[in-house]
Image (cartoon, rainbow, N blue to C red; front, top):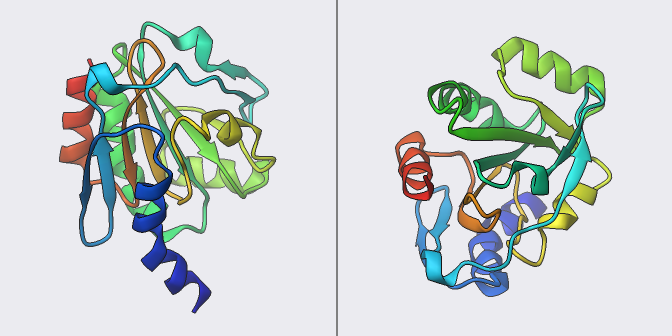
Length: 177
């Protein structure tokens, strides 16, 4: 019951909390927004450590479009969108950096998911919330999965709440490039 209430409130919360005005769309199971370049906020500042122990700092990725996806292994929409995100990472390799942020799992569960789905990009261990808190305030991330696209300056360009529609996300990436 509590989950149903959150699912019903999520689009309202996302719209009310957004620090950046943009064109917002609400679909059956998803909510997404694209911000015009002139209305994008400041670059977001976040850093974290991957499950392999590598440091990821968004400031180091400036100059590239960055796609950040929050997930956890038992999340049904995360599992359903995994192949689409993998294809995006592979198709845009060299032009776009894709980063996962696992919000709930320990290393073993996260790595098992990544092996099962053949994930070609690294994920940050995000259970402590530090990486996500670096994004909060610029763009609210209340739901898992959430996909955030940063432009080459590190500013939020687009956000997709819920299981992605790969055609829409590819269009968002293309516009950000």
